[in-house]
Image (tube, rainbow, N blue to C red; front, side):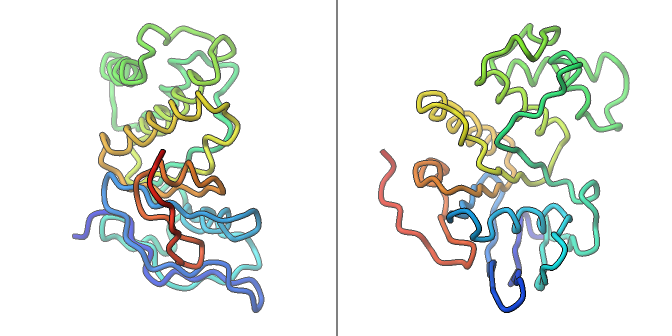
Length: 221
């Protein structure tokens, strides 16, 4: 069984306009950056990958995850996590409860579930924050909680929808290091969609357009 996320001649068109044309494999622990301006097809690509294609678009080709064809599967069955620009933490739940919400039903018992939550907070350098109100966290802390919540759902691949675009420069660098570090540590394939060259270079993998053209990025700063 092939490991990783495979986009097998994945083509997305709208009328006579071709938006996406990709034939790529993302290995476990790698990040593929898809870079382009607004309207270039990046968001459409993500909607297809999670199993919610937008009406009016024609899709051909295959998406495989660890060798399994995802055709016809809904979002819940695909085991693909999605991290957005906004952290989307539930304001009525504590930090720990936000994390618990993502735990699979296969994790049984209060002790086992709490252990998973504590380990996630430790990894995010937020040990002891389980009882905190999300409103009391800084932007960087909220972003780390959002990522760990996504990872606690045990995704087999991760999609990053411009997750750093609302952060200031210093926090942006910190969060890039944290997110890409967790992707490598978890050993899952990831796709970053962005319009920002620095984000794409920091990801450390191949940088392409939605039409599969390789971008020349130069060396990271």
